[in-house]
Image 1: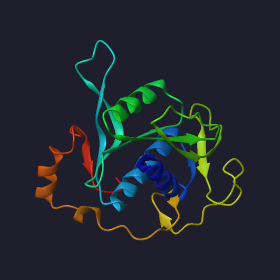
Image 2 (image 1 turned 135 degrees about the horizontal axis):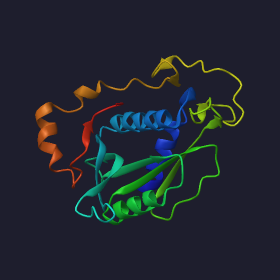
Image 3 (image 1 turned 60 degrees about the vertical axis):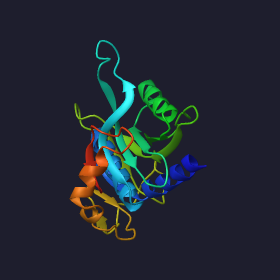
Amino acid sequence: MDGERLAASLTGRLAGLEFVDLGTDEVTALIIDAVLVWAAEQGWRSYRRAASVLPLPPPMTDRHSVVDVACARRDGPPVVVEVDHTDRRRTWEKLAAEADAGRVALWVRWGPGRFAVPPAPIHLVTCEVARRAGPVGAGRRHRRTPGRPARHPRTPPTASTRWSSRCRCRPWNPVPDPAGLLEAGRVARAVADDLRLVGGEVDHGGG
């Protein structure tokens, strides 16, 4: 099944993430960047905060919600990805609407574990992350060390590929220059053809 295959593929990509002492929003942003890199590796066009088929609740029903990442591909239906650290009913509703519209819906859930399984045909992708209380007023801090239980990390990250001063991921095969995936003219013409994935920010790589 296409959705199961893609969920397994994205799970494998996120398994390489490694970071220390990040806030909740920082982890979510890092995972979204990883999703964009994964999409670029597949040769897809990717869109940040793309328009969803689901309208916003009243009184803003004339506007539409957005998905974290939407991907247009030549060999199958679009793929939409939402990233959350909590079980949000709104996300379930949004991804169910996307699946009903023919898209492959992937839900990335990150946190310390015990992830609720969403209803079919939403496909769950998990990323287990350890957490601790941060300084007063700073919220929780999160870390992940691949290859060891996420709840009991003991060894500092040593991967050579750095994403930021505190975020690393395991080295993987080099990704082609995202800017070279499509010529600028082709991108402009293709946006209108991407099955309503219009309204997001085009992104051809890792952010």
